Image (cartoon, rainbow, N blue to C red):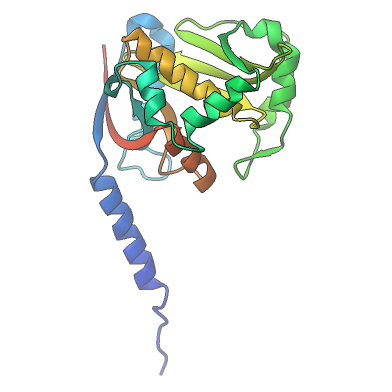
Length: 238
């Protein structure tokens, strides 16, 4: 007579039930694409976000556990910084980075081609995952994309140490490329400054930074300290 070993069955079931419970409790958000900003890009991005998830076909690609900051919750950028002012959180880290001489600016990437290549190739593994080989290719000229904005962190000597390509898709903005040297709090400074700018413009409802539940623990903690939280998303397009 043989007996089956079910020692791993119930922990797996309980873990899945907890995940389902976490998903059910997620706050909901409705994000609206505006195709007039850049018709081809916006429609392509909307299709990518709403296509079936590559692993879980019954849900949309960017619908569960998406990392958002609800920009409407803050009267001003200063109000947002106060909400993340605890030690080691984004406001604290950003303040320390500024004290070290770092500044955030909207940039023309063609002014920093060498710096961007240096940043892209500074690490072969980030957050436990190998870098896409495409980042090793040096770009000789960048073409600005309509409805995108490009931000960078400069050190006291004017050298670029971090950058973010930010897509404006409608009533929300989403990070695209986001890379840096990851020291002296410059990544906190960059994203916190972007959030402040969007809040003070009073034109956008949300800032998106990919997913929250699917992120590795270190990246999830980074997002939490910036004020990102996981949401269930519905999308519309006009």
